[in-house]
Image 1 (cartoon, rainbow, N blue to C red):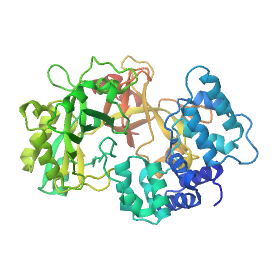
Image 2: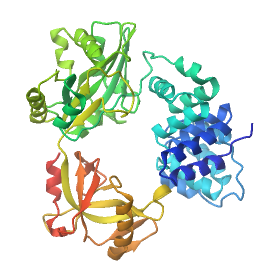
Image 3: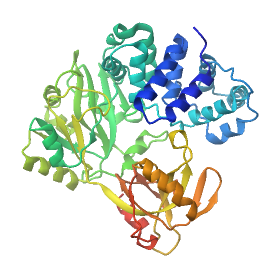
Length: 509
């Protein structure tokens, strides 16, 4: 078996980024995985999915860009060699670590070709968006290992790690994947809700056998208990146990020996209303403040005292959860909602959620098992859509499939005091190929500067943006940033003087 080089991964990444076809992406990824040896599958999978196997290594763009000096003439870096170096880099700390880290990075970049250097910078700074999303990579793993995609997806959900799932699939096939089981103490990939266009549409889609629950503006948590040990993970499977002792205490008090709970947590004010999203998220930072207490709200139960519930219908899981939280002292831990509501009752749940300061509701099919990701329509979230008219301040030249187009736009809100627009965020979401082509043709006519990366523009164009809300930000001068912004349309009927103000965005806090 030939040694797979970093060069091969870079070439595959470029091929994946150059096509819109899911089939072609999957085929390119599968071809590389079939070339890889046992020690190469996991790191190659991780890189093509957009991050090192070791996670973040604490090296920023400024440091890395300074290392990208004279490139190597020929590709020689092997995948296993680069992975080993990144492992050493991630584990380097203490006295003299800065010098040693620079030596390691210098040796890596010195042996890399120009294309490999560019790939490594984007990989190590989290900016590698070549199109190998989780779903595509899972399809590629299934194709390379010649196993059913459903078996790969389930093993991935239960193991929580894409590189390890790929390595197991390529080495042990379907039998190895089917041997993966839920383990208390190892987080499961969370099941996610897809967007519902409206409450009526979600109810019509899923029928009468549903539950309608509050959708909180909080942080997703998964909590595992085994005896007196309790561990807590976020939606991205980052462990935060040490930072949330109040959540640990609440779960440790439950009348069980072992459990895996799924839910949300958020900070509430003295009136029981949600505090700002940043107040909740501050507890998950490196310097979280315990002055902000978190309240948990559980909506699913995946394991209870030796019984796995993943494959049971949601109705059975909710019955088990209700039994676990039956004591009056545990009642506040339940996510508010109504099972099998009439349309009027469902509307009341939505109204109640919004009146209490929450985002909306989630409509869930009671016959659905637990499955990771947004596949299917078993869970649909319904919440009001905020829209704003904002000024385009600039745009970034794209890469990958968007190379040669002006893509990520910089957005500004009107200063009510008459000053220049105030930047509040960026977005490349919601852009069709037609819109990208229009932007690339139109924007240069409004440009004041182009450094090859960002085109700065006169504030002349107004765009309508949909967003989920706003949050405090130290990154932008107005102290506020958009949450999950996406382009709806441009507004040639509006001038920048008619754009929404920074005060309108602050009001969304």
